[in-house]
Amino acid sequence: MNDRDLLAVLAERLRAIVGDAAVITGEDETKPYVNDWRDLYHGRALCVVRPASTEEVAKVVAACAEARASIVPQGGNTSRCGASTPDATGAQVVVNLSRMNKVREVDATNNTMTVEAGCVLAALQDVASAQDRLFPLSLAAEGSCEIGGNLSTNAGGTQVLRYGNARELVLGLEVVLADGRVWDGLRALRKDNTGYDLKHLFIGAEGTLGIITAAVLKLFPKPRASATALVAVTDPAAAVELLSRLGAACGERVTGYELIPRICLDMVFARIPGTVDPLPARHDWYVLVELSDSAKSGSLSMTLENTLADAADAGLVADGVIASSEAQAAALWQLREHIPEAQRLDSASVKHDVSVPVSRVPDLIRLGGAAIKAAFPGIRIVAFGHVGDGNIHYNCAAQAGEAAEPFLAQAPAVSRIVYDVVHRLGGSISAEHGLGQLKREEIKRYKSALELELMAKVKAALDPQGLMNPGKVL
Image (tube, rainbow, N blue to C red; front, side, top):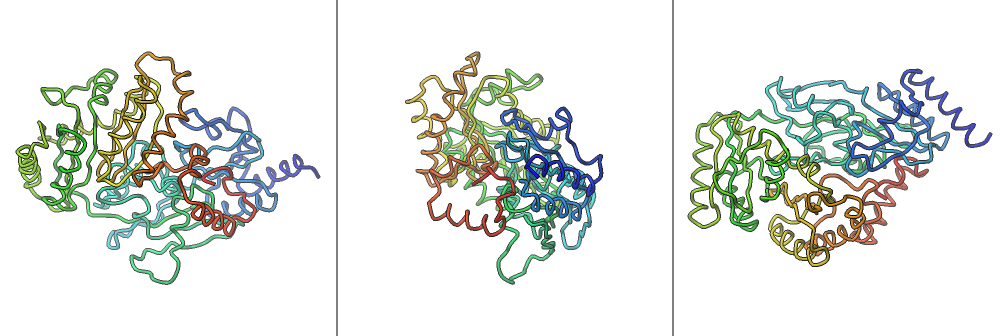
């Protein structure tokens, strides 16, 4: 029996496992699953399988392993790096977990919920809220991304400063291994010192070691008070100094801290209808600050105002506005959230999701800008994002109206310059989006040979046939 016949037999076996309706094969029907949402990666699949339970996932994986067919695990398919799309061979099986969307348990006393991988992130935020709790993972794609993908990429977002990345929000996992066996690590324990903490192998592995099918997630008390401000600062160094002052004054109540250059606001005001500048004068740099507290308190706004006043006296702050209502706070946050869409509408850009130590963010912006402009004088630097945890979206934009194709042809050279500066500052070329296909080769330049060797050994131990999401990460 040749390979084509074997794959046809496999497709029939998969139908027997999950049912005819849960195996998708038509070219038109598979399009949403084989193309990424940024329209950068396009593939073909033998079929798309949509199991409804961990047992079905295990049987699907076992059948694929027996047929030596590689598997592409997939959730909401919102990866920015092509991690959840198949290659062009038409021989890979996409295992989409969107039907596995049950909340198995909420334990409000233990501050945990046990959920399946296909649960949409925003829906889990709502489940936590209904229990008077907070699940703090929050990012732009939360209305469509799924928690299995969030964990597989160790997602970040706007509240990492206080609550940590996805890795810090997980107590236990259930994982289908590459041979179809199921590891039940769904422990709701905050203390479990019994050897290797295996869940951390699968978080951030982008589906290359196994398929996360369920997780025990941490919940937190719901915030009862908050204060939000847009603050004009003199430069990125002042933004870092202000963060330090806020930490000293407010402790862990500093929940969000976003760096925004003027170029971003100009794009938002020009491209997003209904947006207005909340400050009377233009400034080069801003930070969006959010404080929150689980205790009812009327002091947060006053604490924020006093800290900003002291920073103004020190020459760090030029102006600012503190939201006086939830609606005003939401409007300030929308300015930040509109930046990616405004930039997309404005011009072509080469995007970089990078991180450096918080103290080195000003160096990244200064050195990166100098290096890029020396090599490509016409490029505009659009550097914004989570300065509170050192994660800057360091984007390099064409001039408005400039042709996209010739500009994007420069992307490898532009990225090399940015990544070299990041590496020199002790940073990472992927802060929260993963490696996927996009940075699979580039990472070899920046990780040590020993690190890559150890990663390859872990991969070989857990996936000896190399069937789990091949061509991603490694």
